[in-house]
Amino acid sequence: MCPFQYAVQAKLDSQEEKTFLGGWSGWSTVSGPSIVLPFAREEERAAMNFNDGAPCWPEGHSRSVRVEMRCAPESRLAAVEEDGKCKYYMLFETYAACSVHHLAFEHRGKLKETVAAEANEEGMEAEKRAGQAAIAFLEERRGPRPQAPHAQHAQQAQQAQHAQRKQ
Image (cartoon, rainbow, N blue to C red; front, side, top):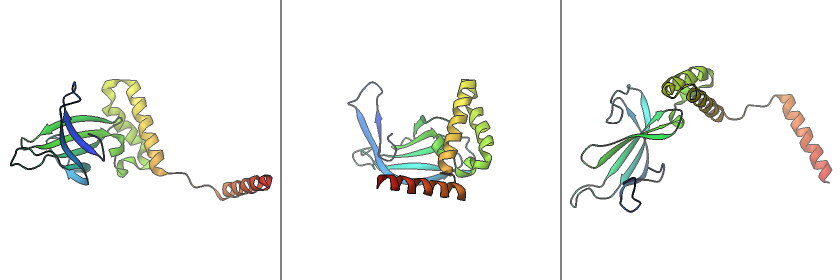
């Protein structure tokens, strides 16, 4: 799966035998249990959709893929299933799927604990990486911090001095 482009089915050891499962067609939301998340809560989660893949049978419909997103400290394709009718379901784990209410700056400590707990099986190093990834993502989402008025004036003064030196 190549996010925002296409999804293919291929054998791990072969570059030649690929089946086109679909091209990027947009976002949707999913809630509750699914074939790749049978114990999921009723909370909404994002899903990427890929449609208009190779025909399933000569008289059949085209293949399609729904990729459900789940919050995790690292990006990986965690599961792939087929419903038997050429509809594929994938689970893509990534920190980019963490929703805003989970990533709100004031809850960053709770997010760090949650993500680290999921990574506990990898040990303390994984917890550290998970926390760093979550904090970095939060900082990115929050954007640049507003400058205090005195900092803006100092920056303007520096720019004016620089402009004078050029002349």
